[in-house]
Length: 132
Image 1 (cartoon, rainbow, N blue to C red):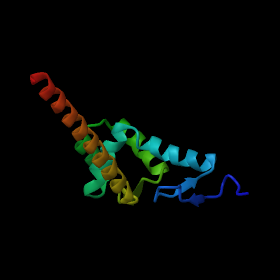
Image 2: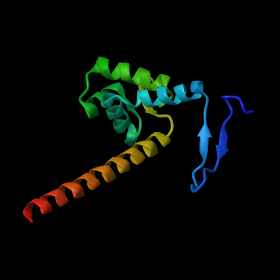
Image 3: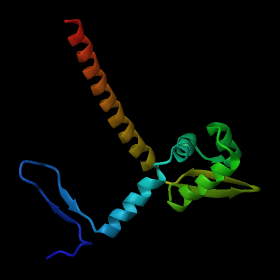
Image 4: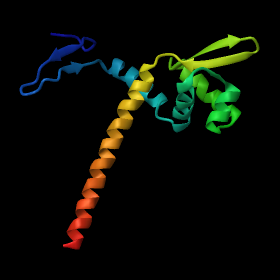
């Protein structure tokens, strides 16, 4: 019998996707990572860093957020390993630690766009029904 920390993969009948069973501790780590990205101010900072490294002043200008707010969120993003910091003289520059964050955001945005398009089609169908 496999322990709860083992990754178990099997092919469910009628499906080509693999089932993965992770321990509650591992799932909590994943949940904590997504919690970091669940705050819109942090997503604004991530978006501001998409074009490259910036210092706090440049992030403030790009996002319109206050200095204390930006500093707080940068600390959280750095602790999660989403951004890294580099001292250059008297300035600290922040950059995205791994570009997979942008891939993840793109997947989410594509999914949301598809959902909105489906809802829009349903609304159009309702409008057409009313005209009959």
